Image 1 (cartoon, helix red, strand yellow):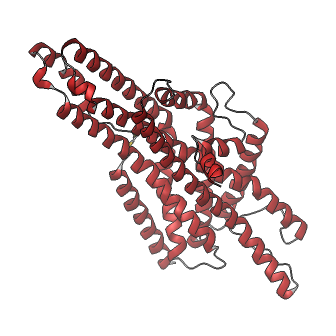
Image 2 (tube, rainbow, N blue to C red; image 1 turned 60 degrees about the vertical axis):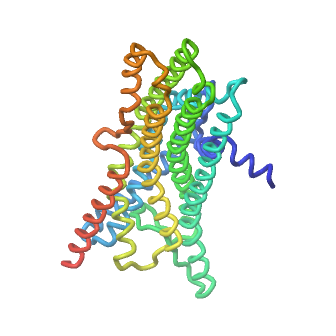
Length: 391
């Protein structure tokens, strides 16, 4: 059991598993789109279901309650489709960034303290990824199983076939036929698999990068706090400082590549999450019939976790950069440096003091953005509730 748990917590296991189910690969020496057929089947099935949701919204455009319920599913489908399209376009860039983040910790001569930092951060990332995978899997399973179980229970009690669905769509076929209903459930399998895998893979990969960059910052802090650095003098100190600033420059480059690689995905997430969160809230405060509360509970956890991943993840990178800047200023042996060396160190020190920010075009990721998202979602919810009361 312990070996199985260790394998599940290995480096990028969750990400490789979920991307693999969609026909994608994170290996640097392989094609990113390993199985185009699997990827296209999931994309086309999700696109078809999205069209049925849009058709239902158009038909019921005067009913805010029904539209908000359908909108919740439609926005999540749009989010999953856009995320995976962006990832396929930027796949090679992100895979090379994974290798660049791992490289310093795969050296043969790495110190035990640095390796321990990497393992701790990686384990935390994989534990979080496994929990997030379970939440997404619970969402998909409850979405499909609960209506099928309800349909079977009604048939067992009354002998009548009354199909039950987790969401309202305008289908071009009649699901009151048991065979058609079964085929429609089979169609939902790739759609729900795509939702679970795309959401888990992309969001947890973002989280893995956050934990990886955290390990890099703490590795530099260990070097700064080491006895070798504190006891060095003269040319040896110059050499160690030169190496430290060179590593810091590489780390800032990695942060820049991380921001550029996820800028589009984060922008899509922020733009859609406000309306999505509003739709989720509406499911609790507006009257519904045949509500799938198991699905709604899991889905609420997933949406809230998405906010935390992108908001607090960016905040974590910013705080680690700030902490390193403080350590650099406090622990450097300034009193042992001649005046001309102190002047030369002003530029690296100023660069280290610059605040690290992760942007998504129009938005700066962090805690202030989370507050803005909650306030905007609350405003949308109040508007919809007021319009429903007037009707």
